Image (cartoon, rainbow, N blue to C red):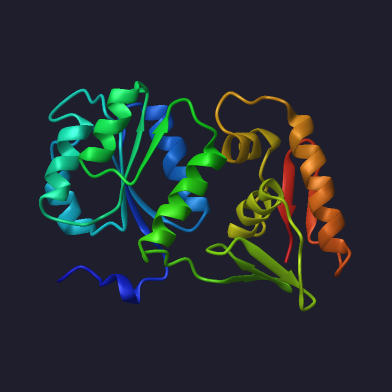
Length: 231
């Protein structure tokens, strides 16, 4: 059966080639929570076949890979056959390497280590620019969330959320009833290596205040466990 055409999709498809297992898992989880379908590979040896089968809207490429071509060569191969947006995510941070990344067809270039929130924002921006942003509107209780335009509405009024508050709302809204620990939110919103739970507490308090100015409480604290949206 032919791959589903992008015009019929409600979720963007992202293909990640990243050899670091922990980072790969974090990327898959984070992209999934903003509404993407994700396929992750440890190297690019089967990339061509996976592109044909998965038909991604965006490809994220590490440069230094343990087997097969490196990320720059993979980008050349992709560009020889498709216009799929490419985002490099790599520790290769010299100016020459950055310029090479764009010369071989990269649409963005993110140097490790990077905050997860920045990575997700760049993915959204590339998808939006390429016309491949298939994020659907999501309604949770009486809150309407537009992930593509990063807006939220309650009681017919736009909520003036900061980027961090919006990211927390999206994560909690993706799976109402699921408790997200402070550690999970730190990893997903601020990125790997950030360990101050007070950041989460302050932003959740601010987010609650803005939500509750327009309606009843929707974000609850499970003491000792984290935060949850209850329907």
